[in-house]
Image (tube, rainbow, N blue to C red; front, side):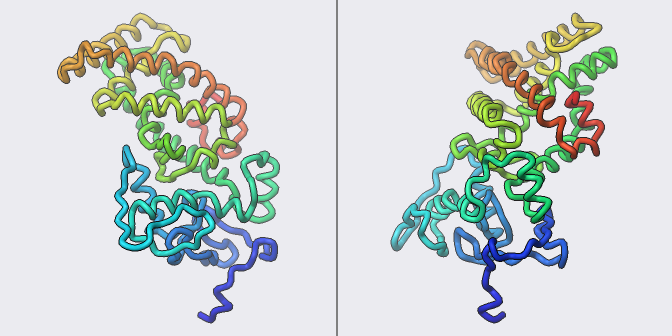
Length: 336
């Protein structure tokens, strides 16, 4: 290809081309859009990942790093070490520590260079921009579409888990439904928290995407999201085993003081059986008197404030998402 055909047209001069941002193609031609080189290593980029233009290799490297409990990469530089300078040009980096630093620098620089500070866009401003350009400037549509579609696909599993809790299926149908709705947030937190890196303020979602706090705070509210990250850290500090996590799901599913129930005594008995089960697990691990049980239950008692905030977000924000009209079961679960 000739050199001038590789030029990237500045955004101010580029024509308004409709892009299918979920597939990374130009809807008018069906071809991938022309992208600058990877901002981390300089190789051919495959798209916007973590808010920056990167290749698949750097995207995969960063994702693997985020999933580690602690990031302690060795520096293997044999020559000049990498300098943490956001104005330095991209270059091939073989040292894992230096490559990671470069990933952090480039996370959001590209969008800020192209569009400036986009964190204050109103819903109307976003819709106007998307309608005129086809560009999903702050990932808003992607996050909403993926979240709602994922939740719809998992409703059957949520119900199946509840019915696997000993005694749950014996409750009246209305009690089962009300308990599921009341516990949806805590049960969701018990899945979501494992993918959160609170040091980097990045969350790996259950549908395979990763977002920085600044990318999604405008969708559901900064205060609400900050509290979710805070409680994710508290859950991570508990270092729950999968056994403990499963029993805790059953316990939060059977709180009787959050919804109207026909048979609260029956539900309370099932919950007590689950607490005894959790005590048995801790006893097997030699932690019966370690105070861990109190810490676990304390987290979920204190999380009520966030649960109430989540209800408000569902009513005031999520209920306005047009995507919800495609998923009546999700609307029912969220009670919007």
